[in-house]
Length: 428
Image 1 (cartoon, rainbow, N blue to C red):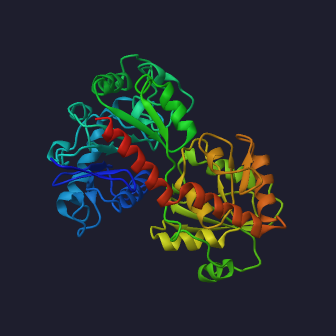
Image 2: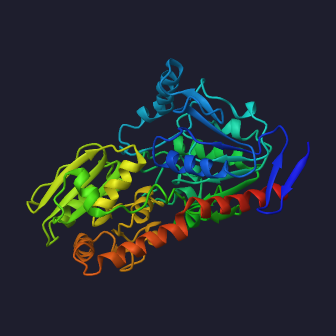
Image 3: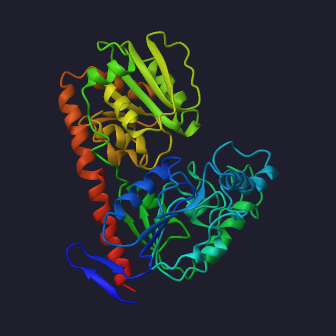
């Protein structure tokens, strides 16, 4: 094996082997997948060999992506089989209806890690049967693991809701509604403990909050933990004239526009109920645009006209929606580094949110947005009013755009990952 060092940017490239294998359950479906794909797309611009491993792929013509075509019979079967990983949840009738992944049953149609000879494996979200812990335990090369929620260091929950079981071995899981210490959360934690014991893992968290959580966990305590925010293409997500964006959406230009969106707008974690409560205190009549899967309803807010756009999968279309808004609101109870806020900032749209978890990393209070007291709906309403009635709208928009370009551009993110790859590989 011949190694080459590019002194200009600190990259290692090899002849005939994969330098890095990026792994995520889905190619681009969902927030974690969108972030993982953006990282993969930026990394592959550099002079090293990169592959993307996923359960199902959407692009049939990209040879650098390994997975079953999502629209094919095998791809559809693979996604159906992924549901079997949820079988043990049926034994917990009192469990909360929130995302929970037990890594119980590796998908028999998955493409296995052993099929690739890679110098480094870059994991992202690997639930739904893509990767079993026992398979991960056999990895001998360095691992970089980018966290998109808390699952990697918990017994199955994606967000802990304040539970500190992950600091030990979980058990008596409140999200499972379990009173047994030997429940499936404890079982998964023991499997992870065994699998991670001899692995060379470097943890990457997109936010300081998630990095601190990972460092407190029993699984990642003592591991190297870095903070690298997720990036996006700031030449796709960029401001367009508000009047043009509103005309395309059929919105009257003189009506203040507020925007709310998520992959699933009905997910309790995303806080639609908190936003509804806040809207009762907003003084200004406005139009509320909502994008994402699911239907939402609001009562007792006659001064707010709600227009639901459904899922908007096209990035250019999303940029248009962000540009049409005077402000974006993210009323999440728990969130790492939501893509929606990054995308809004990049389009020059200031944001209002509760000051929880990763959101203070993104929003500078009264500069590019408003951070409300958790979970004070009246304070959130004050922030919405402050943003949409601010006399210097253009200053807020410039500050939002500047934050995205300086902290969340693909080039900045890519350079940070390349530097990390170089350090991890050189240590070997």
